[in-house]
Image (cartoon, rainbow, N blue to C red):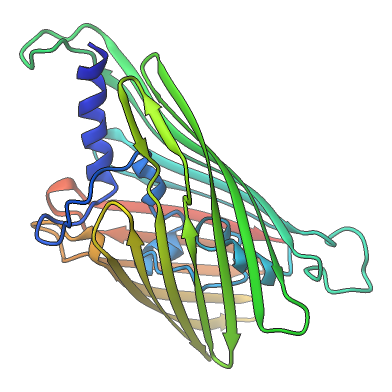
Length: 318
């Protein structure tokens, strides 16, 4: 019975993580906790998820913790993503430079920046059925995947280099079955002129056992770059999952100053992992507005047969 419950939800997770289309799959196997491959943050999502080389943002805790080392303010951020069949993806992040409330004679990020974050994918009202598809429903149950992370990033004194790490507790529940696993992210980031380059690994180790299934967490090695000049930002990233084919992503942003303290941005991106028959080939779009330290962002990913995916996020800096 439990096997019958777990398998369908695992397929749903694989679909919502937008695994590569069959034409690009390498058939390397499966991974647990597919939600770790989702792209939190409407800005990052609109840019195709190519966010590993974007520094000074609290969401570096997910994409590359080294980017936290260049964050000079306290930030609180959160977002919600609506997915097909009532699936909800939510996240919250709180980051603060170590010296934010203490030594005012130094740059607040001189000793680095720490962050705590939580990510959650959940579904409720799933019908409980037997081993045969035509069996009558016997009530409903819920399922949820969550990750809790503690991250830290620091800029290396006298160098245009930042390093970071994150420790994560991953938790999965399906009806009465529950499992947990520990993992970690590592990252580095280099700045030179208008360019930033980055690299690292996400979900470096760990296995999650739920019922009779036990799979490794979705290990990913990545390399990323960004270019910023004036009102333009361009980003690109290559991800190398252990279980799938290479994932390529890129995006661009144009920001305009509308008034003192007020700016608006338009964004577009592409991600090879999101290709789906009937969709727009993995493209994404978004926009955002910033006013005196408060940011609001929106992203839209045409999903074809799986339905469109829209994400809303807010961020406040102090």
